[in-house]
Structures are given as structure tokens and as C-alpha cells.
Image (cartoon, rainbow, N blue to C red; front, side, top):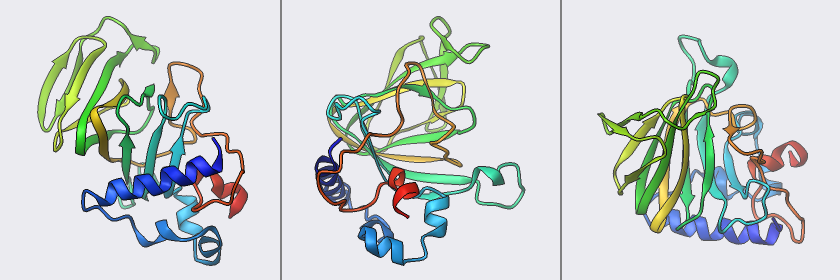
Length: 225
């Protein structure tokens, strides 16, 4: 993706988020230089901040996702009795914009429709080897009520509704009837190692630097901070 396109998405996404009365934390609005000059050690270690991906396919409008990680624990702390073992994200899935089929080995997550259109989630169970079970029914908890769908069934969440997904739940999702503001509350989030995709695909975008970054992405931290 061109950096200029990423900068445009940052502005558009911030405006969309604010339209629902949600405001990102102050560090979100630091310039790259201001972030470098701040105490960014924990922000970098916990990989908090802006995240825009086209999954390496250079077609963001059809295959992509906007994310901002507002808080996150550390994978090394999992299993401790007293530690920050949770994470929170705000995301935007645009109308008909696909986030491809994937699951996690560790993360349990609540996916919440915070506003906008309908969030559609395609679901499969994992088989004994961790692959996609094309036959098994899928049981998920929707706002505390267990629902059963056929393999590949589409769960549709209207604003205010949420679903709990476990590591054995394969899922892909997209917006329908408009862009969707999505909340995610989960155990510690590790996008470097805990995303398993059905198709070989990249988690982060390949950035072409055609202009200066408005804000750094999480994927910029290792080279810019």
C-alpha cells in the first residue's frame, strides 16, 4: 500500500470512529517524531496503536481491515495469576470488505458490533489437526446465548450484538449494509505469531513510502522507533 493511501485511511477511520462518540487515546495522535520523543517503550512492546492491513494483496477496498489496539498484555505473562492478560481493539470493516478466514491458537475474543451496518461472520470449527472442518456444526455464544450454525454458516450481528470466539473457531468477516465499527475484547493479542490463515497470506501490508507517515503503524515500530 502507498503511504499516502494509509494516511487517507487513518483520517477517514478516525472520523468514522468519532462519529460514534468514541475517542482514541492521546498517543494515537502523536506524530512519528513526537512518538519517538515520548516514553514509548510499553506502547512498542505491547504493539498498541494503528494497524491497517491489506494482507499483502494490494486490494484494501476488497480485502483489508482497519484496527487500533488501545490496550494489550504481554504473551509472556499468560498463565500468571496477577498480570494484564487482556487486550482491546477498535476496528472498522468496510461494506463488503473481507477479513479472510483465520483462527488463533491462544486468543479468546469477543467481537462486538459497536455501530454502523451489519457484521457478517462466516464460521467453521477446527478439526483434530487444527484445519477447517467442512462438516461439523458450529456452536458459539452470542451475548450469553449458545447458538448453533451449520459449517460455513453466516452469523449476522446488528449494532450492540456480540459473539465469543475460541481458538477452535475459524472465522472470516465483513460489513454488510454499510461500514461497521467493531470492538474486540480478548485475551492477550499477538499478531506476530497467533494468526493462522487458511490461505497463505500476509498479516501486514507492504508499504510504499510515497509521502511521510501521518502516524506510525504498529508494523512501523521496529524500523522507526
